Structure formats: structure tokens, C-alpha cells
Image (tube, rainbow, N blue to C red; front, side, top):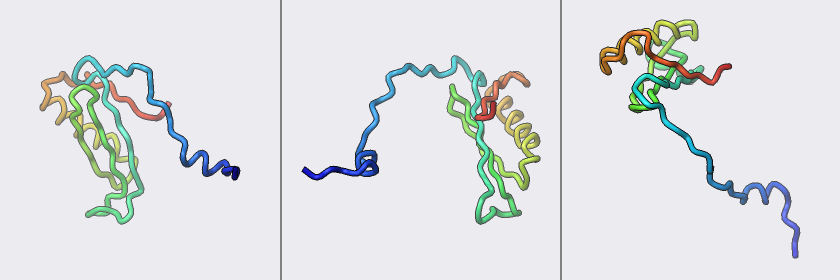
Amino acid sequence: MKEVCRACRLGKATKLPFKGKFERSKGIGDCVHSDIMGPLEPSYPEEYKYAVKFQDDYSRYGYVGFMRNKSNLPDVFHAFAVLFNNTTSKPPGAINLITDRV
């Protein structure tokens, strides 16, 4: 019998399903995930180089904003927060933002 190399074994390996229990948030705005993407190539109209995505864990409401620089993030988040609060009748400042940064 011919021995199979490690890379070939790993390429054909499968992972077992995740057995843990993942709980969604209990209400709108309790957990909003965010992610910054970029630099985008080619840059979008008006030379936007970065995009940021916000998504509510409970309602799955999503918003994508475009930025010329990462330093524009507070402005984009404010636009999202105003739109989210107006759309969901959530009081201002009641959004719990989750990012991948510690």
C-alpha cells in the first residue's frame, strides 16, 4: 500500500460539526457585529478605499458604509447608529458593538 503524504491527508480531512450551543442575542441592538474591509482594489467611486459592515445579531439588519480612510469610522458608525435607531425605535446609545479587536 502506498503511503499518502501529510498534505494529501489534510486536504481530504473533514471536521466534525460544532457541538457547542451558540445563543443569539435576546433583543435588537444587544449585539451588533462589525468588520472593516480594505484597502479595496480597485477603489470604489469617489476613491473609497475601505468598507465597514455592521450587522445586528438579533434582527440580522445590516449596513455597509464606505470610507476614504479608516479614520472616518466614527462618522460612518454615527450614520449607522442614527439610521438603526430610527428604523428600530431603539433609544440612542443602546447599541452594544462587537468587533474582532480586544
